[in-house]
Image 1 (cartoon, protein in one colour):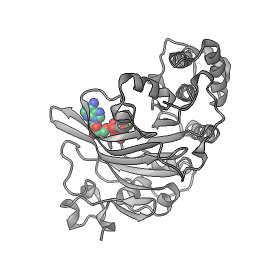
Image 2 (cartoon, rainbow, N blue to C red):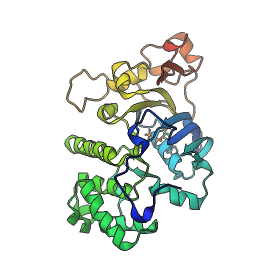
Image 3 (cartoon, rainbow, N blue to C red):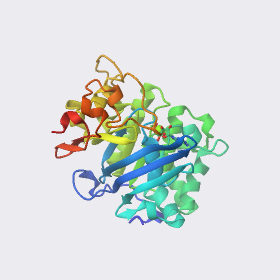
Amino acid sequence: MSSRNITSVQDAQPPSSNNPASGDPLLDIRDLRVVYLTTRGPVKAVDGVSLAIRPGEVIGLAGESGSGKSTIAHAILRILHPPALITGGHALFSGRDIMKMDDTELGQFRWSEISIVFQSAMNALNPVMKIRDQLLDVMQCHGLSKSVANERAVHLFDLVGIDPQRLEAYPHQLSGGMRQRAVIAIALALNPDMLIMDEPTTALDVVVQKDILQQIASLREKLGFSILFITHDLSLLVEISTRIAIMYAGEIVEKSPARELFEHPLHPYTLGLMNSFPSITGSKHKLTGIPGSPPDLVDPPAGCRFHPRCPKVMAICSQVAPSTRLISPDHSVSCHLFSQ
Ligand SMILES: Nc1ncnc2c1ncn2[C@@H]1O[C@H](COP(=O)(O)OP(=O)(O)O)[C@@H](O)[C@H]1O
Ligand SMILES: [Mg+2]
């Protein structure tokens, strides 16, 4: 259970969270494995992923579409449905294994300790309910009185930068950016310790995207929650994240503090991703992209899964899967170029 008292949800308590480098992980994902059972065979969407997120940290998870990012998010929240099947691993949240929680525990856990912002605000919101009622629903379901919830709804709209009068609006009466802010307000309704954001700005134009990213960063500073920020666009992570994990074909291939990753990317796939998007900060570089497309995860390539697309491929790459090697205290990579 969260240590917070949900009858009087307080915002201004960035806990130990302002020192991201210290302490036990808030979320510790260990060797997570998820398949989708299809007629063609199991799709190995997440294949042995380990990732720790410390209190107050913003972890960026980046990789091309189809690499397994959303599957990780949905597994952490236990919102996967058949044909998905979690076949192994653990996800410890403040030491408790999410994979072992029963429905009652999960009901308490979601929203109050961890919540998610999906890519499409339009799909996350109920089109025939006023935004106020959707916010109140979440809070009242978790035991807040109507008057406390109403007060908090106004406060939340202030926090995410929408005029509280817009609480009376239906989703279609708000712009795309405002809808996504409303979804963020709902995700923050119970002051969770962690927010998962799954491509939260992908559907928005670049200017709105940048505004919302700034808003998220300032909310995090004020409230102290951790963020798992998922995107296919690595350039979005420059300013917002403390550490970055790069995912390819169901596996994490590189993990590093954000600045170090941008200054010294190691994995050829990371380099390819960096050259796939224009920088949101406006600095110019030639975009080359990554030739080819991600593999079929029913039958991924032997050895290193990236080898058929890798510009630096060597003979060993198609035969042996690279082990993960620590290059500096917090920077690891799985690539034969860096194994001895
Ligand atoms: N319901 C499903 N049935 C079968 N395969 C799926 C299903 N959902 C996702 N997949 C496959 O799982 C892999 C990972 O998907 P996903 O987690 O959505 O990736 P990402 O979020 O990185 O784009 C992809 O190969 C995708 O095709
Ligand atoms: Mg996705």
